[in-house]
Amino acid sequence: MTASAILPERGLADRLTAVFWRRPRLLLALLLTPPLLWLGVVYLGSLAALLLQSFYSIDEFSGVVKEEFTLKTYGELFRPSNFDILVRTVTMAALVTLACAVLAFPIAYFAARYAKGHWKAAFYLGVMLPLWSSYLVKVYAWKLILAKEGIIGWAAEQTHTSWIISGLLSIPGLEGSSLSTSPIGTFMVFVYIWLPYMILPMQAALERVPNSMLEASADLGATRAQTFRTVVLPLALPGVIAGSIFTFSLTLGDYIIPQIIGNSANFIGMAVYQLQGTAGNIPLAAAFAVVPIGIMLVYLALARRMGAFDAL
Amino acid sequence: MLSDRSPLSLRLAAIGGLLFLHLPILLIFLYAFTTEERSFQFPPPGLTTQWFTTAWFDRPDIWPPLYLSLKVAAIATSLALILGTLVAGAMTRAAFFGREQISLLILLPIALPGVITGMALRSAFGVLDIPFSTWTIILGHATFCIVIVYNNAVARLRRLSGGIMEASADLGANAFQTFRHVLLPNMGSALLAGGMLAFALSFDEVIVTIFTAGSGSGAKTLPIWMLDELIRPRQRPVTNVVAIVVFAATFLPILAAYYLTRGGSETAGMGK
Image (tube, rainbow over all chains, first blue to last red; front, side, top):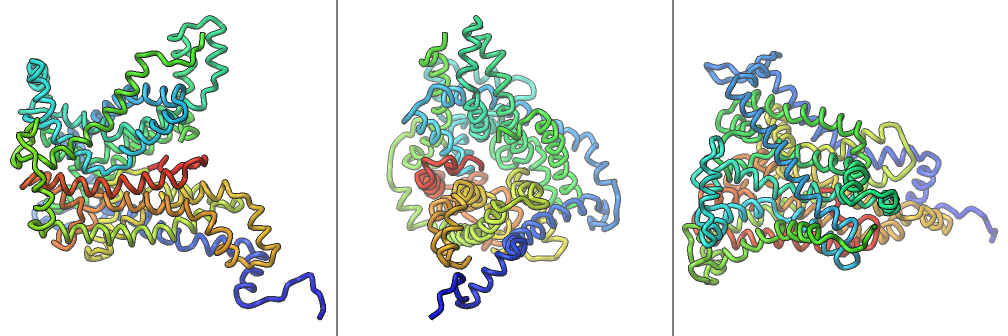
């Protein structure tokens, strides 16, 4: 029996291993091909189909899609009724993002700087569970809360503050028979549903602020408010922007919440949904869907310049 | 002065924020027991457990959507597990051309709003004349589940020392034996966590599903059933009973995923 430094090959598996060893690129290609085929064909292919359809147009009399290149469908986006939808959606997304940032900050700051041990885990799970738990169930919960006969109405009646709600509901533009049919309700639900998406990146950014910097700031005579304004806030900004990417993008594309809660004024997502469904106007639906992509690309480019991607 | 105690106002705001995130969900549970079925009256005029038996025995319309959702989530998760692990394996290897682009491509289905993914898939089915079926739903779900599995797998692989793979090769194992006996046991809990999160995401997904399910009666997933009930309510507390089931089906996997990956730098669920 001769002792060899090299073990004998025991079959196909060993031979393949040797091939992989000599040509690591081959293994890489084998690993990447199935997922890239899937994402490339299914996903990028679909996005291409979407883009393609948005350059078609619909014949106004027969309702048949004309498969020739035109910018007419994009032109239709600027009709007053359609342009209103774009403005309304972007305004809502901006307001929701602002409100989320304000509400998220104390939670993220407390969790990042003061919470220790069990509290830290509690805060982590406390944000994670609402983030992952069922979207529809959460929306449904708010339908219960905001209904006229629901818990907010009841609480207002008990504390004799119903006049505040009816006052809010009589502001022009925010009218509704109850909170659940007013744009105020839509706004509240958006804020609630997307809040965890803001807290997490914010907390990650705040956790990276070194304590020594806060101490240095205090040593140099800054008050708490000054430290907060000149040290904490600038360092947390990338986290805020990273979070705003989610809240902004998710609000731009959502069509379930405004359909269930609010005065059924149209949002981009709802327009896409209705146009592709009952109206059968796929080109215009596609053009509407391209708008959030465009807005998000600009937003991402700006965010990248401000260093938000390091906080993800 | 830098104190380790938080200001009272901050503590109140933080705890208030957490309560704001959790209290609404509790109402779902309360309303499942109410005796009032036509409105959302608070406080409930009376409490009953009849809706659980009603949902179980008298509402046959609940079961097909439930089975469909379970089937879709199971198949989509399996596909995502395979594809996500493959990408993760490739991405932890040496740098190669197009690496950045690939990581963006994986992220895209979840970074862009769901309505875009949905509308894009729907246009593609339209262009290619693919009829809607269970498989078109699965196609969409698997696409955005890949990133969930990938995130979990890649984090674990990064933490794993490359030395153990070399040691395995030195001891005479071939690539497949190394995968089976070294890599898989080490990645097991991360993959399980990723799979559970993907399952939860798929089971609950409605925004993309509506675009890829078509309108047939056999194309109703449980979330679509719920959405119908929200728009045209009947026996509202029954919807709450189903909502509790859906909530549990998403809540328990994420809790399990958290405990499976706890303690590492890669706790599951950071990026939905």
